[in-house]
Image (cartoon, rainbow, N blue to C red; front, top):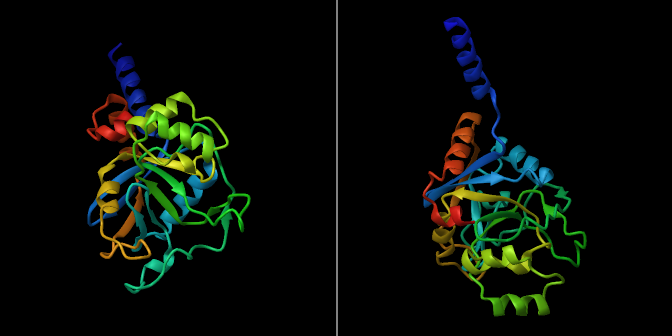
Length: 242
């Protein structure tokens, strides 16, 4: 009987260790802090591309080159690695785009990861940049502001549950269904606020360079993180509320 119980315990331990996390996660490190992002399984093309570039070290040493307070912080331009202080950035990237992966349930609340892209005139299909991305800061909206936005800019009604998020967490609702959202910060949301508050030049580039390194969380670390998230252990209050 003891041997049987021991066998069960060993088998259970092996199964637990071998189990994969439900999602994949990346860590963005800067001198101003770091954040951890969960990549959405609902957007596999963007998820897999981001992981591919991260594994190659593509993003390491690049800048958050475009920062607009109450809107977003943007990075992922490889030309920013060795850019001079007065260089105009935002045109670099791999020589491909990614088809849009719009999901009604994935929207521009504060803390999401989304893909930058060229404008509609040259890019009517709204295909994403192969590397450039942004993290949303946004702002908090009132019902009146959301109603006005629906009437004047949007071609759809914002679902009530999303309205509640925009009224409490905040975000950038006018970008919904126009830019692909493919991840969200689950730890370290304050990093976005720190970078968004930085002084910028006329091109919205921070006057003090903000370099990043991005790495993929290993399976064991990702499993531990998912357990903490499920238990509500992490203290990133704004993230938890979303």
